[in-house]
Length: 376
Ligand SMILES: Nc1ncnc2c1ncn2[C@@H]1O[C@H](COP(=O)(O)OP(=O)(O)OP(=O)(O)O)[C@@H](O)[C@H]1O
Ligand SMILES: [Mg+2]
Image 1 (cartoon, rainbow, N blue to C red):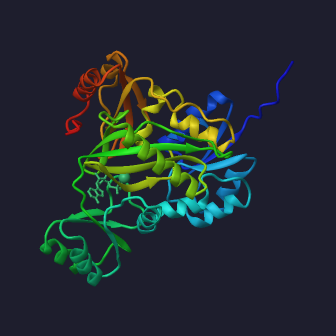
Image 2: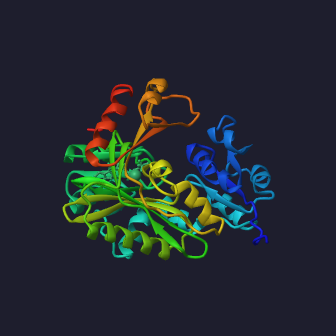
Image 3: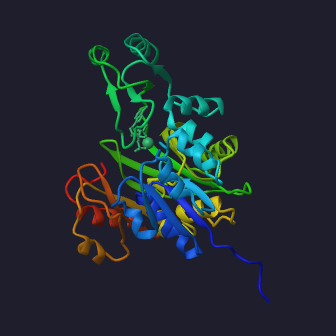
């Protein structure tokens, strides 16, 4: 007796970087086929599917990309509105362009979270020197000035620590519409990665602890140590509320600052997230597989963590990969990207039965990475 036919989906991903590549690696075992659109002919995802080379807003390239796809998704949030609309007229697109619009603009995003009743740092929109001076009065010093759009890895941000800094910033033209945020003296940074499917099924991974340096994520630990059940539940509630409010389909990550018993929302990413890479080996079903399951209308996989996991990013230079491979249990991921200062070119995941042995394994990995990888 044969069961109902399982159709093999053709999935299109706008963007051909490491996230696209890992989405394909998550979906290929389910028989899915992948196509990417990227302006770069050498985009690393090309090794895992068919790569259409072209601009994200080029109609010809978008048409070739969309032809015959069952569903389209994104590996980054700065998709031009017109491209998202073009695709949406032709095929199902998840997450919806509306969800992307909220996360593309930090001011709209913070306003959205505040409207959900979530705690966010004090913030204000800044479009002129006068508003910058106002921001200093309203938020106090220090505060963070960020471009409203196109920021990543801490780019387009500065911390203004004194009135002198504010005066200096006032004397220069702004980089565009900005947001000023109170500088949060957080105890640590956390993120929550959650997923919602086309049928409305949801699942949430355990909270993740994140360590950044120079604005770039270096290390994630999951499940984050010392998380009370109440905090995990609060984060789950926030994630589920956000998914529902945006009628969201796919994986969503929310970055948080923990300050004592409070947690404030920093930002969200409407896609699979660097802090969720540990799920490839560390969870029953990875964020990548769950994203493609969600957008293809399939049942979600379990978000349960096997043990404690740590993910260490490889930033800038290629380390001694063979030495890393000799570390028992180290999972090495290279993205096929040329090394460049400040660029994420791969990551390593290690698992351990308890936090103490995880810390030991992290140290072993970090000792094999080029200088400057230690997380604190
Ligand atoms: N209001 C704030 N108070 C204190 N630290 C902050 C604040 N905003 C950002 N940071 C620090 O800068 C990092 C990067 O900021 P943010 O997440 O807003 O920008 P991003 O460029 O989108 O980063 P990414 O691409 O790594 O997510 C944060 O993870 C945090 O360490
Ligand atoms: Mg961030």
